Amino acid sequence: MYTGFYGFSEKPFHVTPDPRFLFLTPSHQEALASMIYGINEKKGFISITGEVGTGKTTLIYSLLNNISETVKTVLIFHTNITFDQLLKNVLLELNLPIMDESKIALLRQLNEYLIALLSRDEILTIIIDEAQNLPAEVMEELRMLSNLETSTSKLLQIVLVGQPELEAKLNSDNLRQLKQRIGIRRSIAPLSDEEAKQYIEHRLHLVGSAAEKIFTQEAISLIIRYARGIPRTINIVCDNAFLIGYGASKKKIDAHILHEVIRDMDGSASEKPQPLPVAARRTVQKPAMNMTTLQQMFTGTFVLLPNILKGTMIVLPIITFMVLGLLAFLGLGFLQKSLSSFAADAQDKFPTLRQISLADHKPTVPDVFQTDDLPPIASDTDREDARRFQTVSVNPGDCMLDLARKHYHSNSPTFIDFIQEANPAIEDINAIAIKQKIRLPEITEESLLIKSPDSSYKIHLGTFSNADSVRPYSNEPALAGKKIDIIPRKVSPNKTWYRVVAGDFGSKEECRKAISIMKGKGLLPAL
Image (cartoon, helix red, strand yellow):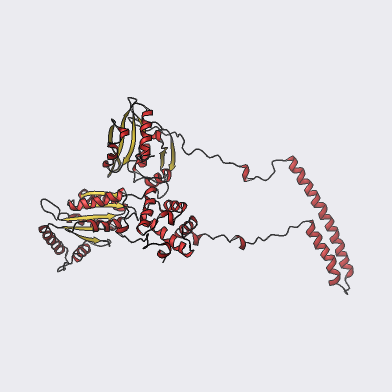
């Protein structure tokens, strides 16, 4: 519909898992490489987890396009099934006729097929999408499939792909034996703000366009803020924005269109009444009962009554009524004058009796980062700014990635490491409680300085999910002659990150000089 209007070769933000549009962030690339490696090396079980809409299914289709021809694959995406049904689905996908539907017969048939593959030096891989929906008893029986092996290798490879609930299910006591069989476990992280911007640019480039041509900068910022790092949400928002822009004949998507899309997606258009346009509004005012109004009322009475009552026999009563009305009119005038005099006198005597304007009240806004009363971080080395924090409360739906993205505009492991260091009680970055108080350290160039007990200094270069990330620093001239340490950081029971530290520096000035050089080269994630 709108592709021709915007000059696209096809829709850039469709939500189908097309591997041609896969945008490989470091975590996506790591997950894909791990699946390929695990299958080729016959690791048995592989687990890949990620939030809804982070591109897991797209990654699966990319895997299918990148594995060797000697690997036979079966993709299972209906997971609310029994183990017998799963076995039948596998055999049917392999085009094997089912002669006997008993479980023992199905397992024997699958085992014979696997032995035949082994003789041809081929591998069978079962990929299960949405694996978090598998019943626990089915997952336990899947473990039994791993017993189909020779003395040297596994005959069957199983890739479990699912939402974070899969990780929680694997950590349960009744599946601990299956957990021990999983050779590779990887997690796909939501996009950082910079990655989200690159994702939008990547998709538009593939259809022959560019972000600056299609979106205003404010519109891109709104997309990134609303999507919170979820690629599928970015796709839906952008697709709807193009529909609205096409309907309004706007070649460039601006913030006004994005606000309309977000309002529609949140359902606020049907829940909140929209204000009328200014031209359609009408203000109805009640007439003020003042002296002028009273005079008009009585003047009208004198003019109209003689005509209405002309020729009647009740002139005398009417004259009486008008005289009484005139007296009442004079009495009201006297009363109004008295009340006005009283109000003025009261204002003089009681000056506090006045209207209060909002302009008279100016709230005091505290600084964002303040020194709180929590104890300092216990460590063999001390950061220069370890006492400056902002304390926040965890809201429903928040995670450490959300807090880092909100307060530091990035959810890279470096910022998560800073947060966890400031909160030693957090042993698992994936398990924070609602209303839990979390300290967020202010991060500046001084934050990267670490003072050692011998008064020398080290520089926190960054924290990474992969130890190989130290390579860019090994040949960095600014660190010539300095020792580079890789410090494992346990961020959850099943995940280890790596902090890269360089030292020893003789003074702060020497550190600052090195920081300035590396900052200019983009080698410091925190800056």
